[in-house]
Image 1 (tube, rainbow over the protein chains, first blue to last red):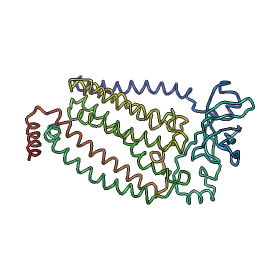
Image 2 (cartoon, rainbow over the protein chains, first blue to last red):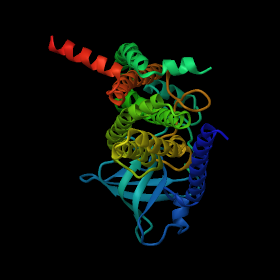
Image 3 (cartoon, rainbow over the protein chains, first blue to last red):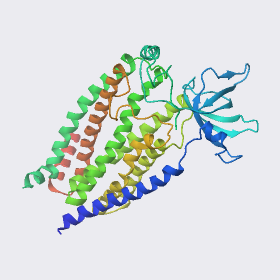
Length: 153
Length: 251
């Protein structure tokens, strides 16, 4: 084996070794790294009791209720099976709206209401002018605003 | 068989060529940058959900794309330098790092500025954001490791191995939004099938990506020029070059 071949082999082994190590740790991650719980999981008692957790889902259409004179807002977050009331006091992100995917950080109150201290809105990968969005919604295009959206898993 | 290649890679030749290449890349880069900026900020319509805030895409996406492209370039150059003992390749790898770190920083900052009003937070320990931050630390580690060695050959070898090992992070950044439930949106352009962005918004984005890439190549060429001169400063040709610069400066 020439020295050059040997060095090529070493570089190859470094890449293969790191790739294998990363691949294995990612496999382990995939099972543990859960960024949020869905309302179905939360109602089934999956998040540890009394602990803060993230609740993720879609804002139920027409469910947003604002209290006059304060920043207090209540809305329903749902997945494709269950829904849950979220109470939040603060400024909502610009992308927050009916049907939008949101992640709320907080805890479950005894009454079954999720008290959030942070609400994040998730954006999708579609970019278009408002007129296009309107005409797509009018045609009931799947996956576009105005049409039924699937819950994130 | 490879003699022409090695002659091409001889330091005085590279020094002269890199200076010319730098200009050839930078002039079209600035022209395209002007076109893309006009197209993105003036001609493109506002987004249906984000309004005008989506326009950060014209800086954020090219920066993020280059942060990864430059890392792969750096690792490949390092591997070539390691395997073929080619000093020019190491010079290229070393020149890549500060440019790549700058684009990574730009991608993180523009993302944070956009994230506060849109998502509701500047920073989230989300798979995409975290892996991009690790990329920034890889660049810092690479530059730190290089400067820790007195001997440039040792610095070349050690930093090349670090760059090659770190390349595993690049696919993680790209696929993080697909593999995990991430706050960051999925890929708009780099996927099979048509891009999910309207044409009037797309062309300025592609123009900006091309402009940023040409800018990177131009700055890389100029950095390689300086790097080659710094490495060869005791040689005959470098002395001639430096004497030329100092006489030109004193006139």
